[in-house]
Structures are given as C-alpha cells and as structure tokens.
Length: 235
Image (cartoon, rainbow, N blue to C red; front, top):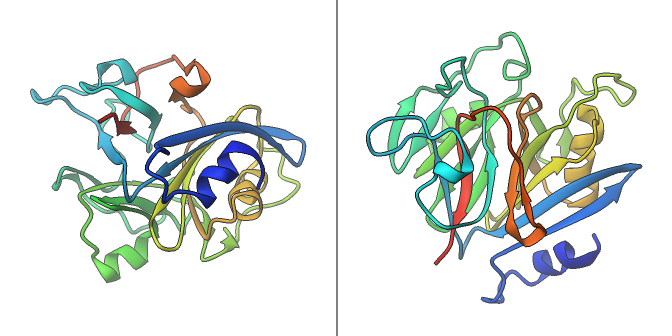
C-alpha cells in the first residue's frame, strides 16, 4: 500500500482521521478507495426516509456526509435484494439459496455494521453465527473470503464493468470502500482488495450502479436512483 490511504490504514488510531480517499493504479487500472475508521466514525446504511419513501440519492440522505456509496443490489422498485437491516429493523430477509445474476453467485455475503465495527461476512457464516448487526446489507458475490478469491473468478474473463464494493479488516476496525474507475473483471477487482489493500474479506456491491460521494476528492457521482446506500455521518 502507498500514499494517503496507506497512511490512514496504518494510523487509524489517530482521532484526526475520519475518511481518507485516494485514487491509485493497480495492475493497469485505476481504483478510488475510501478508508473509514469503523471504530470511531458514524458509519450507517440508508434506504428510506421517515415516511417510508425510498431515498434514492446521496443528496436525499438527511445528514451531512463525509462519504457515501451505493451499498447493495435492489429490485426494479428499489427494494433491497437479500437481507437488509437499518437501525435494528429488518425490512428484507436473508437469502441463502443460489440464483441468477451476480447476487446468486455463491458464496455471497453481507456488510454488517455495529456501533464500533464493520464486518464483511459470508452468508452461511452469518446464518450460523447470527451476529448482532445494527445495519446490514446483503449482496454478492463475495470477492475475498478469508484471504482467498471467490472460486468462480477467472483471471482472463472478458466480463468487464465499472464495479464497486467493500472490504473489512479482520478485527472490524476499518472498512475500505472501492470503486473501479474503469471497467475490470471480478478477478482483477477482487485482487485489489486482497493484494493491494491486504484485506481478508471483501464483498461486491454492484456493477450496473456504482457511484461514490467523496467530497475530499470533489466527487459526487450522479445517475439513476439507487436502493441501499452507505455513508459516514459528520459529527
């Protein structure tokens, strides 16, 4: 690891750090990564407002944010696909079966947020462990599982897309949210988490909708309305 992102990941105990974003090149492609101190920062999921209406855009989140990203797949009506929990309330159930598309490419997993931690957990491990998640969003496929790439990924795959996802440290103290700034395949994207960021677990969010709000970089991606989103709320 190099640059500001690496410095943050080595110095997360320093209170001055909140979210640190950096655009880097890895194996011929550009990636933007934002590292969050999950033990200190107010990292949350967002989907609906108080009246039940789906938010759909970063600007509709009723908080000042220092970072945000789309955070999981959704149906045509923007309901979450798979488990979704926000502020302790489950609004969509866990899906453990395989199925079509990237979500059903098992193993898949979920992002589990607590007040002082963020963990990417494989779906069946979550079902067996039943950890307490204040917020959770299921997506798929897993990119990295216990330090190993998803077994179905092919290094020479010609399925290229703009992709985004999240990786977490083994202790749950940090989460790194990544978007590929040019089309890459799953193998390349997963290796960025494992080999560049050196994170043991990582989860794919989407490729059809991949957007980031990173004011540190002057970045606010626009596009069609989104489903679940993740963000860091400013103090």
